[in-house]
Length: 441
Figure 1 (cartoon, helix red, strand yellow):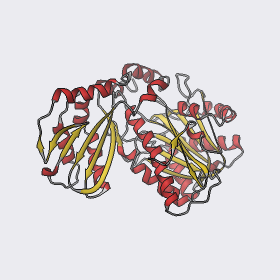
Figure 2 (figure 1 turned 45 degrees about the vertical axis):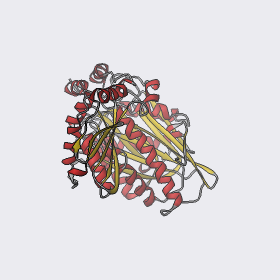
Figure 3 (figure 1 turned 60 degrees about the vertical axis):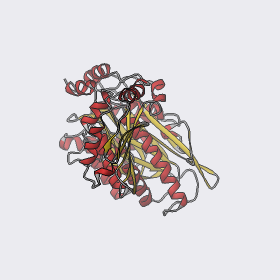
Figure 4 (figure 1 turned 90 degrees about the vertical axis):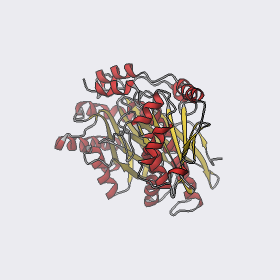
């Protein structure tokens, strides 16, 4: 049993945080498009960013700030324009955005981290930014997490949020998070923005190490379409307002905090994979028997990233051959006579040999998982995004069933090693092609 429990509140669940999301006029649709996460005091800050050589101005800005000083008070995020491939003007706009928020809050601009999402190659609408920031600051509250989560989405069908609570020294410690992402999702950071808040007291170096490891087990283990992006950022703040003893090195409490941080990141990562453009289900691939954890994770994400496998899942075809082929090309050595594959409770291959199984029942298992949630409204989402660059309204009833009743489980064993790893993805549907074929037209 996990030594924590889920609570409400998202990024404002931890003590000492406020958040807001408003309609600033950055998105043509008029939907919310500017978000703020604010700590009452300076917080230790850590970040994991895109590995792409083509990066948005906000990514370079945050990297520079965190290298100089691993702390921050605020995160500002705009949706509608990615501010990527925007040259020197894009950099100036990033600097001005941070400066404007710093002035409105009465804090140094160096205490402001920024993020952007939207169409690549478009400059931020600075007039809307200038007029929106004072409204954003005025709207900040300790119940503003949901508004912030809504303001950062683009093609997402639902907002994505989580908060967990545990106890250190008889005092509550909380971690909350929100994120966005639906397309251009692949390991080594994808088109996603994720913001995490925590009220524990933790040293800067340790917090960065924890976040990097958590990312490797969560956001770097999801794929929708094999594409990464220019703006990807995972930013985590820890403001120490729980007033618990400082965690400065690995030990029992540090391991507990990291495990909870990883759980938050994994929940958000799975929500992104399930909300993949045109997706109808979440796919979870569990790999065991590898020589080490890294190898197991590599096999898992190769399988879940296979376009052939993802297409078979969309067709509800229990084609184990595509799973075996993907495992074999993952770049991880193993003996094929040790390969074992299961789909849910159906054993499809043992000792490298195919087994007789009820193909109709296996296909029905996949159909039941996909039908437990109303499929993503690909055409409607395409229309909304093509016309405005925005998401549809959040459907909380559907969101509450996400990740629980709609996961198709693939279990693969490749040997006798102790290494295990998990990756998450979604099926590849007709709607994915339609959404992206007409993305800007």
